[in-house]
Length: 179
Image (cartoon, rainbow, N blue to C red; front, top):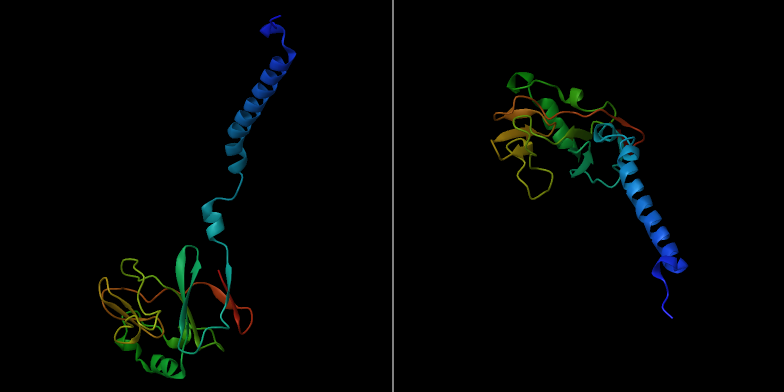
C-alpha cells in the first residue's frame, strides 16, 4: 500500500526542522552586522599603546617595532654615536634640535622614533647592518636622498623635519611603553 506523502509525519517534521534551521541562520546573518558595529573601530584600536622589551637589543643595534601601523625605530646608541650627536652645531641643521631634546634624560643611549621620512613618507634605510646609513651614520632615505644622523635629525636632503618622536615612557630599564 502506498503512503500518502501529505500525511507522512517524518517528512513533515523534517521540513519544519529544516525551515527553522535556515530561518535561524538567516536571522543570525541579518543581526551580525548590527552586533559587529558595536566593536571599536580601527581608529580607536590604533591609539592603543604597546610595550616594547628592549633588553635583547645590543649596543649599536637597531630594532623595528610596529605601533599604530607605523614602524618605530629603536636604536641602542654607542657612546661614540651619542658624542657625535651632541657635537653637531645647531646652525648646521635643517630642523635644529639638540640631542638632549631627542632622548629621555637618564636613557640617552636609547633613541626611539617613528621610522617614516618626513619628506614623502618613505621608510628610511639604516636599521639593518647591511643597509646604508647615510653620510651621518643614522638613516638614509634612498627615494629622494634624505640623510639623518644618529639622533634622527635631518642633516641633508629634501626632508623638512627630523624623524618624529612618538610619545613614550620607560617603565623600567628594559621595558618601554610607546603610545
